[in-house]
Length: 103
Image (cartoon, rainbow, N blue to C red; front, side):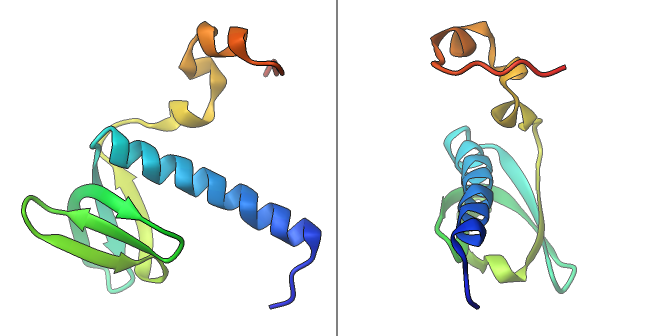
């Protein structure tokens, strides 16, 4: 696949969202339900990930899952605030060099 600078920026942006989501779930030990291509579901905690795979601990057993085999990752707790400043609180925005107002 031939990538242009614009495509690379888009891919990097997408990876930051994915990384933020996975890292939040890992750091906060949020239980997730992972749905695979073969329609099986696995529940556990994310203990690690990289660009191609995720390690899930289901309470004693660890499973290495390839991201290409995953359809969805559903957290058991709401995590949308990691993407939206209004959920983070005023202190983060006050300390930010650049502030964006959403309507």
